[in-house]
Length: 204
Image (cartoon, rainbow, N blue to C red; front, top):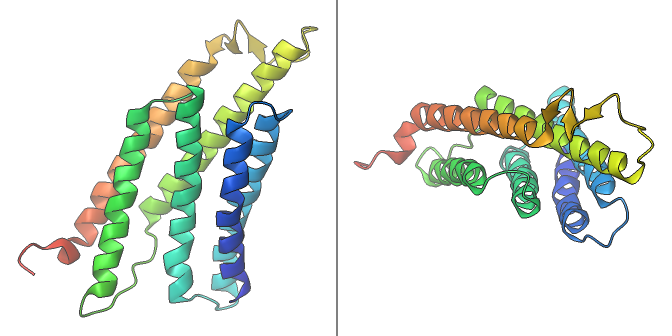
């Protein structure tokens, strides 16, 4: 297994620990640890693709596992957000439906006579990057808000006022980020379905 694929496997291995910190309230500063793990996992996503292309280490295994690792990481984060009451289940459902559809098309492509391995599309990358940024931003906002509550001396009073940032409640900012995530996810899903419609042709 080459280095890019090892980084992808590491990204998947990080997910259980991320979920642990997100869900176990007894862990001190759990959201901080969760954020650090999520950022670390996101960095591996950036590195594995660059290394694979730069050193000609692109493999079919990597083409399959890399987007799968992204799906696992993002899905875990969004489900944890629903658990915390930070987002809505319908947003997660849209994301998961898109990922199941894409995975189904990939499986159909591999099983076809062409035995094609479909790489991640540009819209898929945009969706992934925006979703990761949204998740990091939401986590960071809740961390800052919790620290502002813990340290009632106004440590973050410049950043947070009236339960939000610059007068805007955290939940509204989170909602906007998640709505945009859902919209981009839908667009990328429709584009993906159209581009690879030959693999879901009911006549074949």
